[in-house]
Image 1: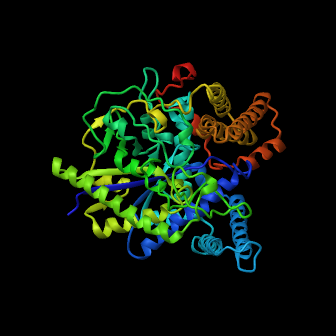
Image 2: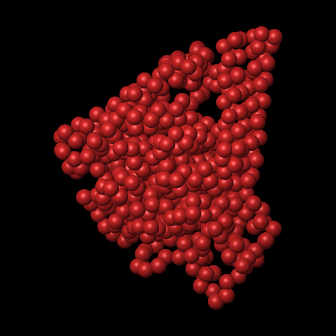
Image 3: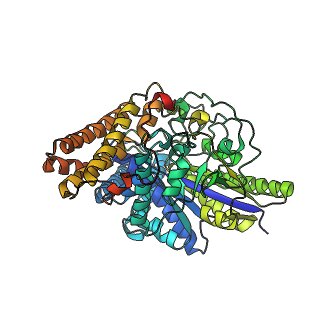
Length: 560
């Protein structure tokens, strides 16, 4: 007998890095996540399926990531990247062998570990998945082993988008892109940064645009459902710790919790809130599993090969004092951590059942890249959790759609403005360091709306002009990416983010000038198209509002 349902949501997203640098920010960021996260994830899903176990993961893939994983330029670059990693491991094997320059049996063992590991990932990519990661996810969704959700086209920070035509275009383009890659319409959506804005006096809320695009559900943070205040959680990996924690004003308790899903007040769109304790157990730098000293250290690499030879050791150990990594010891800890996590989920749902007499929901959501890329052993952790839930627990693991189909929401609520950023509000994306970006975005949105209205209403459509308009739309989408203000705020890659933002602004203005002058430089347009080639299926009709929807240009001040 089941004690309740468990939904494990993985949100996969990277900014558009294609032809925009290599290292430390650029295409290699995609390649690292491909080899350390996306291929191991697919391998795990495939292995389980062959054993008769359906992973039942809900995996969000943003459209802009799907475009890069499907791009031939990126595929070729990835193969060269992994081949270089294999060669680096071979060189380390020679260097640390008994006859090498610096004999070291422990590093020799690790060099051989990586030589084998990278070789297996490349072989799976080429031979098991035919160089098609997105096709692999499609296969296992078609087999009902997983569910794949979408997001806004370029992961825009939806509440701060100024034009309703741009919001509509972001979500409708996402649905079109999903259909292209997965052969069906998506059901679920990951709201970028879990950012939500309710309806305002003069414009509809984010839920309206999800419903208009045919999307049926999304995810949010626990405090959004329950009220109160978001807790400060210093995340074990990533740049999040550099952001000052300034909590949003506390809200009165709503009387609800995350053990069930809810309808939005005005739309048949469902929302699930993350279970706070189950999320904290993984994310927390102080108490989360990835902070265990036996796990691989992300930040320290071999000076010659760039391979990771060290373990975390402790949270306070300086990089220079890190001890060598032991894969076997790490797997032993994974076994203990997965046991604990399965027990936590089982106990949470059992307590809920005893307290209320009803079967509850535990939903957790994480960045996919946490597992494998940041936390090297994380994918094995997920696999063990899936296996142990099936074998030892009374918890029913389901995809989000399966849960909602079997447990339609019984209550409706309107969500407050919120995000999963530090403090639970929008400050990570709109602050003193980033406020200069938003007037530029708003001007571009307004220009896009006006140019689409002007040229698509013409009696005869012009092919070259439409080409220019579509590229204008792509540059607007890329300008709207939430990644640029995020990277500026965290200072993780501030100058890179500023340069990328200004680059898309410049290309937008170049094409805008062509359209306004009526003189389109086809050679220049083709050059821009060759760089920012995402969404070839983009429909300009997505930028044209229908019905009574408003199109309100927001000011930076009004969004603070």
